[in-house]
Image (cartoon, rainbow, N blue to C red; front, side):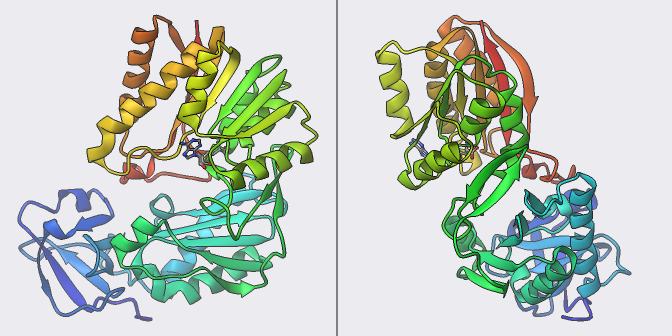
Length: 401
Ligand code: SAH
């Protein structure tokens, strides 16, 4: 492994090489004709066309349908320790260039395919790093990764956080949460985002603790909030609610989430930022939206940031129906000229699908929707143009006439 040279050759079926010449990094088992050699999981292997021409170099995983992840497209470069080190350094360098390296802020330092490190996610929360591994092949390289992160980011501690259970199963990963380097924080960490302070629960929080991808969208939403009554539905730790109340000078905010842990964090974050006009409620989002509409309530802004509705391409139609339903009710709740901030983090729902769904909502509700901003994840979540599967987040800001 240390020399980074291939231990086996993976031969593609005829006419299956095109995506990989196009630098797409995921080789599914269905594209593989046979393997020359007996690679262990995590080994470096070469990918060749059916007639033996070199295509790319990657890491093998016999346990996943995603049999091979590609990390190099040049036969003269071994996938040795130097490659991982240089890629992590480059990723951290980008965040420095983006001005996201302050010691009390939070940022994603490594974004998987978007940083040419498929299967590795690293988030920095103040002085601590949270590492998530979503590829089995990264597991044997964890010590090296931790060493490099210690060198380039000098954190107080590096924590390993398990990937989503479904994802781990697909990859054959068994990585319990543990401390990789340094010390664990002895309570919540506080980070600054656009001048606001948020408590982050690194040990128990959702994702790695905070939805960093929405950082700039929270600010964008706040720009429209002045003087309005705002509903922050699916609020988690209150990111949109606090931004709208404090930065945006909203008249009042109602923040709702089904998780009591989330609403406790949202309450604490609102108080911590002196936002006395934020009310927080633990309730099911679908039921609460219906109840507010039935009660004839109205809002000047509604933020919808639901969990992932579509886990696969096959679930897209059901997901779109669910998006339609909540956006339809949100429009009913909005006064004329009200602002809808509507998000989707389902990667299999495309931007076009999502906008089509909104067109359906306009049709059904008889209201014109003016698109003001169509946004994605913040710049510390780069997407490789060769792997658009990494572009999952949509955040549409629309005026409902
Ligand atoms: N807007 C948040 C992130 C929201 S993530 C931020 O900026 O940080 C989606 C949230 O939806 C999670 O907090 C999850 O607890 C919540 N959720 C999931 N199902 C729900 C439901 N049926 N009703 C209300 N909230 C739900």
